[in-house]
Length: 435
Image (cartoon, rainbow, N blue to C red; front, side, top):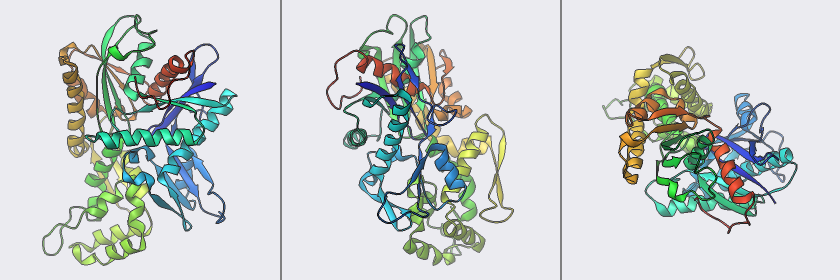
């Protein structure tokens, strides 16, 4: 049976298959791209009541949303694994709803279909990447998250399913080009989690089937790119619509709606008729009626997802420092807000502090001093944020900072692991975990 490896990421995903020469290669999921946004758009325009809704994926999904097609954009589906939402349904428009679990399995089915067309064979064995922690400080929910992802993989036709930690996969990819042994801290900071692994790597270890004793410690926190986007939106954009504003009596305006508007999978809950009516009646809560007008424009015109995208774009522009201006003309003509690197750093200080502490904690769990770490291998889309990378690097002053492919290192490393698991060995036990 043919095998593959899937990096099902919060922001982007990739899939590796055998290359026919004893190695693995990443599938071109979209023309010119080996990774694809973890996004799906459910099209409701013209859909019949008794047929499944048409869907488009990746960049096509984002384009459908930007173009204003009727339907629902779903992003960051991985972030709901381990939560009660995964078994709930969500409205996608046109009086239709889908289960979040089915959204995940549908996306995996699309990846599998594209990969099978590229490989020219049916794929029945898979290694799935997983973060060190799907859910912080809750082992039961963390285990449930992996079980949900495994069930989704089996539902789309994978017979044998195993897992590997994403930062370990990144270490395997990094190791391919080494000529000496190193103690490396892998920093895999993506859209949903910041994961760290302290690993011994080197040419003498490269061919070993099992690497358990080379992994000195794993640690992670559920803080990453989508959290950065949310806090930038709360700090820079939503105050213009009343977040942390004051009412006529001096009390702070209720904040729940703003947190929901800044969280991808909760945005649509703000648009229900009951919720909209409640918000409309809250005009008197705002000392500045313009802020309530802007809030209602955001809700009435369903601009929540667009504003999250604005915050994400601002984060990317600010990644290397400097300043940007966020255009909010859709909320109010000529409305905009300036944001510079120092303001962004202040908004993200708590998040960055938690991530850096997780890196330090990883070394402590291994009983290794920060000075003993020889390299930090940065991978994941959020490692483009200079303030974050510099803070992590400063915690390990003797380590060389090495930057992998932001989006493809984990996929490639998972492919290396899949080759070792499935390439020549008998099929493993079902549901095998990392290691």
